[in-house]
Image 1 (tube, rainbow, N blue to C red):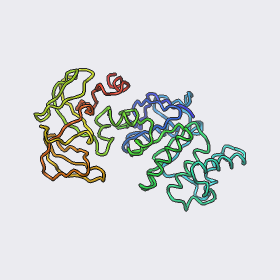
Image 2 (tube, one colour):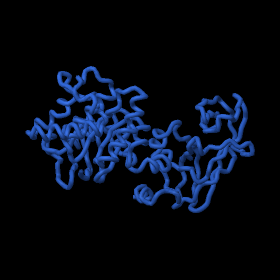
Image 3 (tube, rainbow, N blue to C red):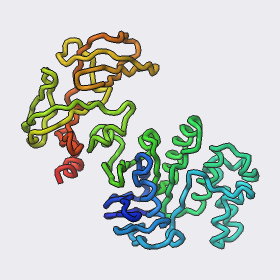
Image 4 (cartoon, rainbow, N blue to C red):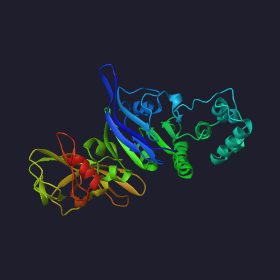
Length: 369
């Protein structure tokens, strides 16, 4: 397998900028996910890595070799499509064997590779069946098998679970990650589903309007969002925002929100006056009747072991994750507290986060330039 290095990748279609100056590294054997809403540029980036699209500018290296302007057939990659792209007139065995036959591999070696891969994917019992009659999950395994059997430098997957129902998708998420751990394949995976990304990825790149908003581990992206877009896109429910204006001195400090002092984590540097926003995840927004920051219960959503309580405040609607056994009545006035070391602080105009003492060093350097 091989490292993938993308530097200043840029792609335009006429006046439309699909991908803007993107840079990232996928390490050898890493499971890397490109995450974002439809039209953000993630599939275009994947297609450029595959050689199905050529970049306007920038470089792509695969295993240390510059492949920027090589066509797909010249790159040692395997592509798994969303719609399987299987040959309906062939059985499972022949579908998986097809790329090896095209390479001119000896028949005995083809048979051994196909059977080895089928056993790995747990589809060895359907090798002689037609793909037309298979369930969606089995068809996706066949598509994966056709890619794996080639043993390429890397695997590229474009929303491969998008057409599966919820039960199959959840099963395939676990199986894909387990498969990756067994074969240690360098994988670039595109999805709009944050649960898929958070469940499988070693590293995630969150894209928005052709720009990589943040690159990091699932933990970094969830707990230390670099922008308000990332904070809003990741998490269900997403991060709460409380807007305010004022100056943030360096060191221990607090801000006044609706006549209530909210203590902040120690800031790395002083922050200039202007519009800002506090960000806090629902599980870090506490209901505490002794707090001076108040809200009225608007409603609650029962989720089994917990509930999401929606609260109407002077700063808009906020959501708090609470144990399901607690009872809240609509219209009930309650106090709200923030877990101090879980607060994020954003520039409300640019959307960028201000680094705090708890922010990983790599992200601090990234935000401070």
